[in-house]
Image (cartoon, rainbow, N blue to C red):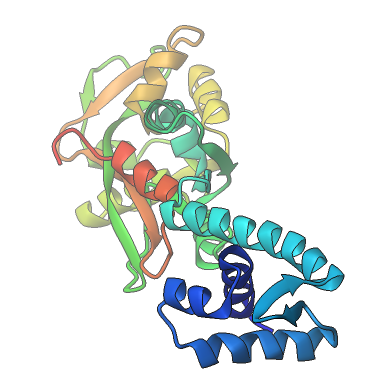
Length: 290
C-alpha cells in the first residue's frame, strides 16, 4: 500500500465512480480499479459495495476514508512546509573565546534583526574544539580568528580587528616599541592554538624573533589583569582593551615595525544543506563592503 493508493481511493470517494476518478487523476480506468483491488487485498476487506453500477462505501471503507483524509491532509501540509523551508528555524553556531568577547553580541543582534524567530544555539569554546564540532556537523557555522585551510569548507572574512600591546603605565612609558624590543619583554599570552596566539606567533616568526613567554591563559581578562599588575606585556584586541580601560589601569603601545591584525572568518561545510534560516543567517552576516 502506497500513498498513491490512498490518493486514488480518496478520488473515487469524492467522485463517486471509478470513471470520474480516472478522469480527475488523468489516468486510465483499469489502473484506478486495480489500485482499489490492491487496497482491498492489503486490508483484506471490501471497501466499496458495487450495486446497480454504483459504488457505496462499506463500513470499513468509511473508516479508511477518515484516516485517508487525515493522512493526506498532513502530507500536503508537510510538503508545503518542507518546500518552503521556513519552518526550520534552528541555527547552530560555534565561536572561539576571542569572538565571544568581541563580536558575539553583534552576531546575535544581526541574526535576530533579520530572522526574528531564529532558534539560535551558540557554543563558545577554544578554536580546536569549534573546528572539530564543525567537522562532525554538530554546529552549522563557525566564526573563528584562526582557520585551517580546507577544500571541504567555505570561508569568508567576517570582520577585521587590530590588536595592541598592553601593559601597566608604570612599567613602560613610551607610546610605541619595535618587535625586537617586545621580544625582550616578559609576555603574557593566550594558550597555543588560539587565534590570538597564532596572530602574535605569526608576527614574531615573520620578523625572526623568539617570544619570552612567562605565562599562558585561556582568559583574556586574566591576561589584562596581570598586565595591569605590572607582571608583563600582553597583546589584546583593541575593542576589548577599550572596554577594560574602564576598570583597569592599562597602557596601549603601538608596534612600530609591524602590525598585530587578525581576520575573523565565517566558516561552514561546503556540502552542508542550508535551510532557509541558515541562508538568511549568512545574508545577515555579510559585511557592508561585500
